[in-house]
Each structure stands twice: as C-alpha cells, then as structure tokens.
Amino acid sequence: MVDFELLEPIEGFVDKRVLFGMDEEKSGLESCTIFAFTTYKNRAPTFKILLSDGSLFSFVPIHLIFYKKPEGEIYDLNDLAWRNCPDLEVSITSPKFLRGEINLYMVTKDRWLEGEYICSMDWHRDNLIMHFLKVKNGQFAMLPSHKVKFRGGDREFREYRKIKDIWEVDESGRAKECFKKNVVDCEE
Image (cartoon, rainbow, N blue to C red; front, side, top):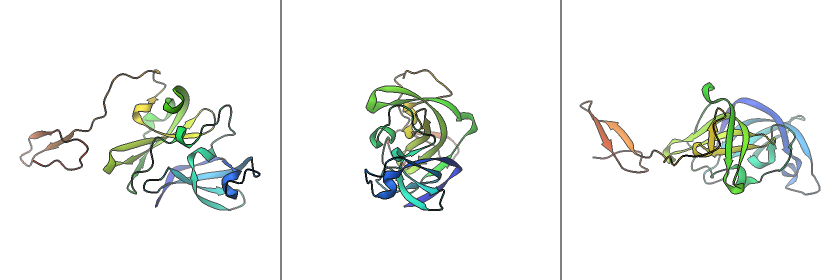
C-alpha cells in the first residue's frame, strides 16, 4: 500500500455506513476532507479522509465519497472505478490544460455524463492511466482516457486504438522502431 497526497484537499462527504462497518442503520452523510489517494495492488482505488471531529479513515472506496451532496442516481463501485490498481508505483499529475469540463462515458450504464477533471494517476509499468474526475451527480470516478472527452469534447468515439508500441533511439542517435506490445523495454 502506498499513499499519495492529492494536489489539493477536497471538502466533501462520506457515506456514514463505511464509518460503522457498513451498518445499514447508520445511513446519511458525514462532512469530511478527502486528502490522499491510496493504491493497494489488485484492489479498487481508495482514499484517506479526515472527519470534522479529527477522526482519520483510510481505505475508503471511491463510490462512498462525494464532493457535494448527491443528486439523482447514485452509482456503485463497478460504475465509478474502471480497474483495480495494478501495482504500487503510480505518479499523479494535473495539467492545467485538462482542467475543467469533461464528458465521461459510463460503460456499465451505456450513457454519457458531465463532469470535471481533477487529476491523472499513471501506473507506468502497467501502461494504465486513470483520471480522477468529479461526476455531476456529486460522486467521483476513475476512468481511462478512452472513456473521457476533455474540455467538453463531443459525446462520441472514433475507432482510435491505444498506443502500445515502444519507440526508442539507438546509441548512434538514429530512431529505431520497436513493435513489441505491452513491454517496458524494447530488446533488439
């Protein structure tokens, strides 16, 4: 397990049930500050939160935290997290150029939703980038680039393919093409 501090803490809410072992009688929302992302190998993305009374909680799943009180349909973990975290090595970036309005495609519901870009998490060894997003209903999502249209882009997909080829320059400075798929190092 490795924690990564979010670039900016997010004031929000947590589903009270998670604070009490998923006790259904403890329904409602509790104010909190979401301040760190945690990656556990082969586990769903989780977060660290601090309650207003000073209580700290770890391992809070994405579907139980909110940046505002939820409006409309509430989505579950399978809707909001594209994949489990593949390993512990991840980098977090937040290019200003990508910030703002986005359209995200929720595969499990076969629908487009509006949202806002926060940051990107890159598991470079596994060739996986997931973007941490605000969904208009008050929830968060972590989806790959091919399920997000940035800067309010149109709500349709072309038949693009993920770039998996490795491009290197050899020791003489000449470019060489390497077409090995899903590898970190390109061998001759």
